Image 1 (spheres, rainbow, N blue to C red):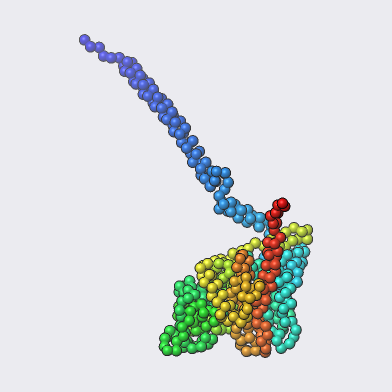
Image 2: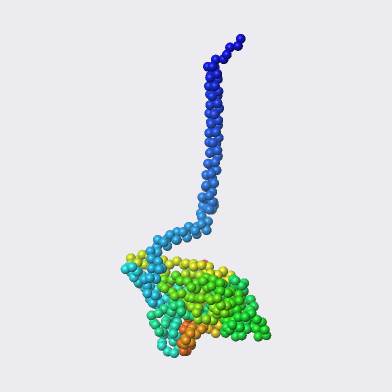
Length: 475
């Protein structure tokens, strides 16, 4: 006879089962903790190695130094911080504190001024030897050959530092023509048109172009594309060197148009304020919706496009500086009355106006202007000159009467570079001739180039001669 299992025994079985399950869970937890520790033991060292390479991957494993590009970035950041700490006054502060007439025809590199009730002393970038020479060559005497206006600006194209700024306004001796923006740009604007044509129309210096009629006129009939027995053929380079208006008029009206002309005018700094230590008038250009007006602008056959000599030197700098437009400066440093530097100038790139390839093409065309174009007479004999023969020289001229036809504006914008080194200058000269034509702009440019590089070569040649020579053994 079978007896019924007591209830207490069943409860005991359930308790034993719970104990068994709890043991399994406890054992599983232990295993998981062990596996977790193993994973951490593997992952953490790997992560540490990865972090090491992330933070040290930019270092050269051979010597632990940063790569050059990283050193440059660090230096740039440090320089930026240094500039912020050093320049307790800005260009704008200087511009608002100084009478622009004081920074004109400077005879010394330093002068004093007041700002916010404090006294300061400025060191300029002026090359005093060049400045003194240019001042001595200007026709100050009041005779029939004395021009109404004369403005000369010489600049270092790679830094924007102004090396010379000289001139006069015969009717207002206190005005500074170098920063006046009311001079018609004339054919100097062909530099902008040429650059636009190279980049927009894929023209090259040797590209063949055509025109009808005279070289220095611009009638509406001349901007039409037509070919007949009277058509003249010329290279792009020669049309630039000879300043052929209808060629550039056609390029402006038929190929570039309003948008491209405006784009490149802005790229070269027209219609924009120039960041300088003294106020500079805007160089202006305005384009309408009329194709013939585009032609007038493109070739400079108008009196509405204006240019200051300072801006003219900037245009030449773009060509001589691989297409880069630099901000001009005339102050190197400013010190407070305790001798602490409160302003230090550093070269400022405005932007890349044109490509280096384009600037090379325009340089070639500007050299042709010197060799066989509108500057050939002014630079005649340069190959036999002991200084000029060592230079690569390029330029662009322009000339136009004012509206009253009682003053003729005569321009030269160009550059000179040592063939054996990186030394170079950009220069702009405007002469407003009166009743009689006196010394021309291109002549002043030649004088400035020779004077500057004669001094430069004298210093560099003496430096080479002064280097230690090997001592020969006696015997």
